[in-house]
Image (cartoon, rainbow, N blue to C red):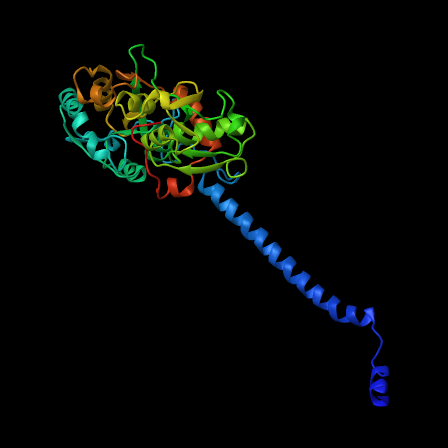
Length: 373
């Protein structure tokens, strides 16, 4: 008993100081590790968000200048389009004109619809005409830059890129009998959606399904609209890409997407084809009209040949042709003249606000849209 009492009495008294000398250094170590980890997490998050925004063409990097005409071209008349070379030796008049419409996985299907126009173009120019197809816009641009494409069509959002980097000269776009362009951006939602008409701010917290990053009606115009209502992608609303206007339209009709900006032309065509019913969705916003997919030629075509190409587009009657069938329901009935400087002012502003990301400009990985803006 005495020994037990003696051992008990020899135990040191409890001391907070001793506890703190052990615990405090440990807490400091844990805190330091946490701070470093948190800083690293924040850094990685910021880098990830910055990369996402750059990929989306949204990064506000002042070192990236808005699209302007490449230095290899001249613009003496101030129309923002590359001039025909003054040196006749640099002008071309090939025996066979190479033509391509909108690039995309289904581009080959357009061949039948264009056969009457291609025959008319051949007749008017006295040239053989071959139609090429490209799976991506980047490949089509590359062909135009390299002189392997002479007459081409690009979706609305890609036209500034084609003009400034590949010497594309826009001459016409689809229009109605009234001579007005047939396209605009329409934002659609399922018919039973709680999102109100003409209230873009209602899109906060929703997921917006865009078409692709070069599309004006399917992406850029919508992003600019939402920014005007203080809504930023990733921060205020989610986003994804469908790859094509018809996919966005059908998915809204089925109720599997919440909201989608699409081409007015494409929407009308899908309704006319019976692919969707107008009662399945609502249009909650519509932009001003702008040129749909635009056609033109390479800047270095000889002036006489370029004039004949332009005349062929503007004189061609769609009646009874594949083009009339292809664009049934869109409101388009013929080609109408287009001024890049005037008619694409809105598109250029959208492109400066939502820039084509580096992988689109340098090496495209987008899914181009079907004949849309």
